[in-house]
Image 1 (spheres, rainbow, N blue to C red):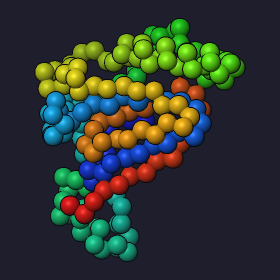
Image 2: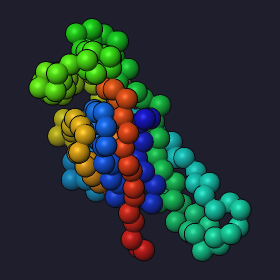
Image 3: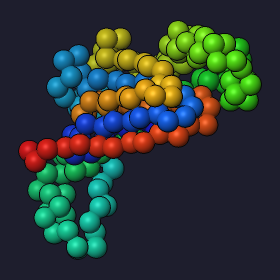
Image 4: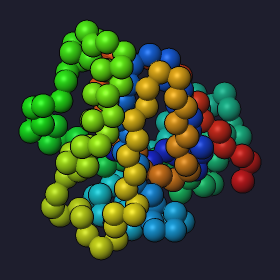
Length: 172
């Protein structure tokens, strides 16, 4: 997926049925209370909402105009996994599929242990994003990942993956 923060300040869920993926999260700030510093550091832009343009849902369409700060999501063109081609020792999808279950789990755990090497270096690493804001996890079959409201995230599918995703938001 692209690096983004979801609209409507919703809580996202992702349940993995098959496969595995690496998640990278960036908290909005050290306390998790604001997206603005992170958005500026990532050269992010707003993705304008396009839901309900057909006029069938006037109440929700009005929300897009009334609360544009939550109705539009954030997106960055930065790819947190751009340096993946520099990591040659990781198994590819075919290798993972041919491994015995225990060996596959160990290989996936090795990927997670070494995933920090994927993080881009350079301009976006300014004082408004610190190491305590960056979190990575490995999702495997049967794992449920919760995506906190306003948190930036990007995934890397390590093998073919089937997952169910949902979002929840309240009426605020």
